[in-house]
Image (cartoon, rainbow, N blue to C red; front, side, top):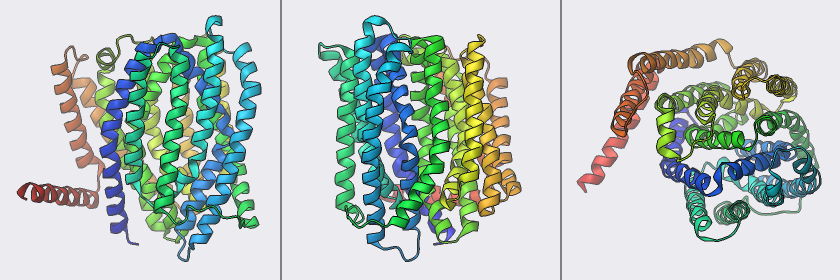
Length: 516
């Protein structure tokens, strides 16, 4: 499969994902506003703190999830792949996820109860409800865990429209949850946690039905390949090491913020992470469309094509996020005042820092996909474990010594850069990616565009917007300027030609539809 075909497939899949994301982002931001109003800062913070604690247990399951996605996609990229072979991987994956889910639920029901009762900062009168949130969050976690093999099939088959439609259903369900919270006269926090379980169950059922109807690989077979299982467990064993410290760093930071700042700080962090999820999802959609091609090209031995995809995914992911991020960060306080009726302290700072972290992650994500594709991840996972462990320890020491809670997010950015360089070294060693080429073709153009755009924004536009008209005009100016800068300074001649070609094709398609 040539590069042009890959680019067209990625562009097509990305368009479908973007169409759904515009709707989902609008619904998501609205539901955050109403949920915060209905629950209040304290209960919203409790939900995020307890939910973050449950997510820490993904250390036991996340590694297998990575292995499942990698092995199914890799197998689909093999020249002589058989349906039965993929069925074997799918069946083994499903059994493994069930076992992992049961183990996680048992741990949560024992250690989790003790930790919430004795360590977390939760008002005594809300402790009983917090236990219900814990159990409901565990059930939702288990349900989502069972969706992983189905999601991996969808990604491996590059049927991104399925994610578009199913995610729209999820957004509508969450919007319905907000309405039910308002009208049902029960404890709102308890009710919200319960409804999240219902949403997870419905979503998981839709994934299963879709996969069974569209993919012949989605069949459970009792013929297991012992060598395959051994390779999956060996791969997941090292992924377990790295995934564990990532969970420790991400969700452990959530617990640290609760211990040193209380539920209100968790509420601010929860809002920041929700905003980041909505904004970064534009990039995630692009990555989701290109990642299967990275893995399949490695499986087929097309290393140069794989390197090109990694570099372009990192660069264009960075540009996409920057175009959305800059207008938001410049007028963040105005946006929060327009969006939320009551803004928890630290929210604006948290959002800006988390989005900057995600900018670095745009470079990291495709490199990580390349590392997982080649399968030999032992040395990388050891280095990753060391970096994130130091990150978590440094966060704890800084909070203990009285530094501001924003320090946690600043440290996350610094250590994410360290992860980037570790990935570059590993990529050069394992699948021949040129570090010089990555710097020249990805990092330097990205930093040039960022510097020019940021200088324009902060030097020429002055203070924050004071009304919606000014905010709209500033957003339009920043978006246009950044887009022009990306086109002029961030793209090669070939990339500019390809973008013009895509836009021309889309314009002719729209014009033809109008003429009819």
